[in-house]
Every structure is written in structure tokens, then in C-alpha cells.
Image 1 (cartoon, rainbow, N blue to C red):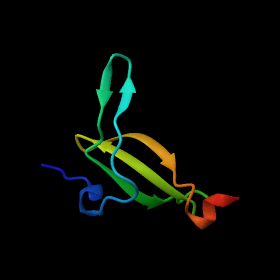
Image 2 (image 1 turned 45 degrees about the vertical axis):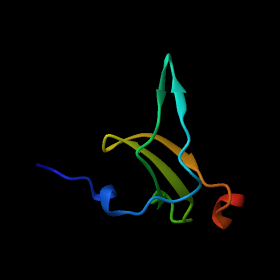
Image 3 (image 1 turned 120 degrees about the vertical axis):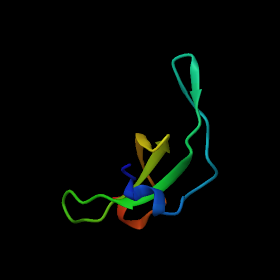
Length: 68
């Protein structure tokens, strides 16, 4: 059995919101705050996780690095 390394990170941000995809509503199990490794600036990302899969990535606009 493989486990995701995300399962050990605490959920971050505001309360979990429901999202609509087609005719179904997706409620994430948790939202994980992480840092983008691409260029080294350190932008904060929020990973929306459902059934141990990341299905959506959003920006945390309250994070100082993400404000431009």
C-alpha cells in the first residue's frame, strides 16, 4: 500500500467549501497549504484533496508572497 505524503500535513485556510463539477458537488476532504517549488520565489498554494487525490490547486491571496 502506498501513502500520500500530503496526508501528514495539516489542513490550512478557511472552512472547507463545496464545489460544483457538472451535476455533482465535490467537497474536499481537506485543503493543504504548500509552497510552489518552480522558481524559488515561494508562492503559497492550496491543494484541494479528495480521496487522497489533488483535484484542484488555488492561490492563497492572503499570503504575502502571492500579493505581487
